[in-house]
Length: 310
Image (tube, rainbow, N blue to C red; front, top):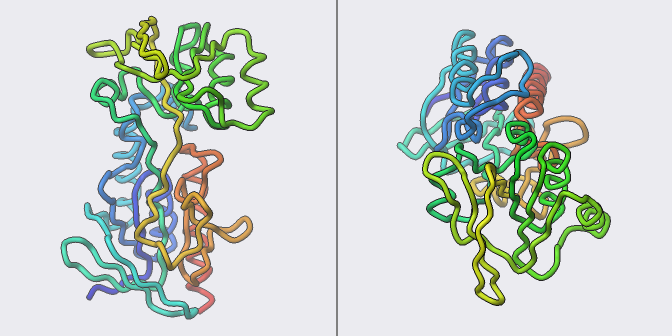
């Protein structure tokens, strides 16, 4: 049984930033990366909107640099997945975490940065072209398709919001809705309908994403008539939702109806003393690298103050 002051579960901008601040506060953090070291940004080719990179940076490189910075201050980073936790309900209590390799850890404080996973359609052609024109974040990647024709899949508020965002950048946005109506709120539906360069296609699904190395087009199928049609596009955005990686905390930490961890007020405190949450695992509104990093900083400061108060 290992004993640590601060255990950080998950990497990515939130986890690594928490590690930087925790290490500088002499909390001697131990960080487990999870199954996808670096998180969602490792699937992003170019990051152009993170402060401090005037020429942009690719996601994997950024994560490597954040890890090096965390390690520079004394963070121990381990590749591994924590599959079980036992939280103490008492202030000052010891929390337990169990790694899949059999390692057991006792921690005085835990920072959760397990993130969220974008939902994809699961088509082989879609998966092959992730990073080559297929994206799950219009705000992150829309800029690269300025003046070009793109498509977006989804019928909810997020899809509607991203479609109107893309319409300000791209020459045309084809919006594919699986059913015969959008499930977005009425105000968002009106916004989409009133945007002249958004073409709505109801009862429409993707049959195949066309292209070898990059997206070149889309073959669509009408799920009522079976009719297929091809269009030329350079970018495809999937907006069918995200799934927070919170299964391991089910039954112990408070979550909303979608499974996102609930934090108290403007803090990163969860309902368990000494357990903090940062990044996309508790943020379904913004889901940006810079906001994740900000909450990672907050979580480390909250953990430091918690430990000082004991």
